[in-house]
Image 1 (spheres, rainbow, N blue to C red):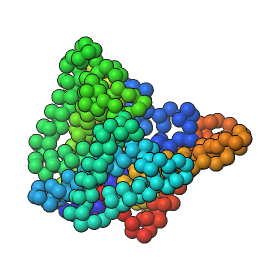
Image 2: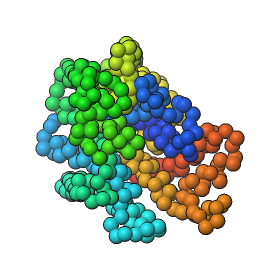
Image 3: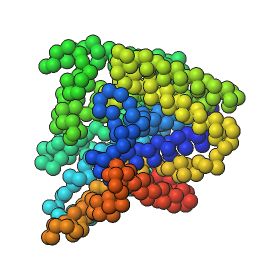
Image 4: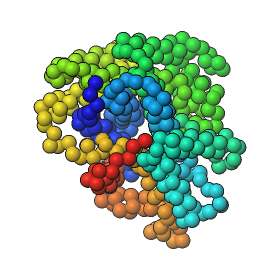
Length: 423
């Protein structure tokens, strides 16, 4: 294999991260157009494609990042450290709003949190020697877990799972599977994971609830989460986590399918033949997912096996289309915006979550209630954007688009100055 950068893959990543930024940052969660909200339970909206698309893209990138397929001590350390760095970035996001070591309030507390955040970001995104990266990653991981389980009031119920945490776990296993197996074995592992997860979720009784079921909070995945992650789950679900333990198993399947497509893109075949094969596989996954959906519903929170195949099919078709347009036909003049986003994903993942938290802590005088204060983010949205629109959903979407535009400017500066932040 030849190690090279695939423009269409960067563009696909950039598009996915832009969509992520928009759907994660509405002006108001109470005013969202349906396609920009997650499905209530079963089903799949465009928003529900973001997470599996990113995992699929990560898997696709693995063969490009490791063209020689050699699992030695150096490569093993890189995989472990990169996984830890990604995991810690996500875990720290859950800690940010709880940080308070000196009893500060107001602006002093904000300054404390920002300083610690910048230090952690530098430690996890900085370009150090392999040894320094290893020490910093394990140190931060150890500190965060100690705080979570130390019994300290502020951290005793901090969430452990999360989006970046799942990405880290999937990257770890996908990379090892790629380096230690051939394509036939990889297909077998993916099939085993998806069929095994389906069997567990639909055949195994749930202690305390009775027969196997796929309902909120009473299924086997929720039981496992509640058993091992008590008090450390998503605050809005409490007794189970949408990025929980058992549901990470099929997510590894998503990563493996992406990795298989990455190997297809590296095969010495005419590019148009690769496009044809990607189309065939993509529609095959899509159809299988829809068929499986009849008895095992497509569900993001459960990361059901039908959801894996359905979203992997759409991802393969999308990447195949972009590959044909950009890398085969050479029509790439329109790609710059997506490339700007696609080559710096982790900086967006991390700080696009930090900035809203910071803006919420910055207080200004309330324009309507004398003596009261309001967070700057709420002030800007409610008094700067909402009055411009009759439809609150338009105002909410405009705020999200402005936030994405803000990030586009930042990422353009990074891109022009060849500043790439990698874990």
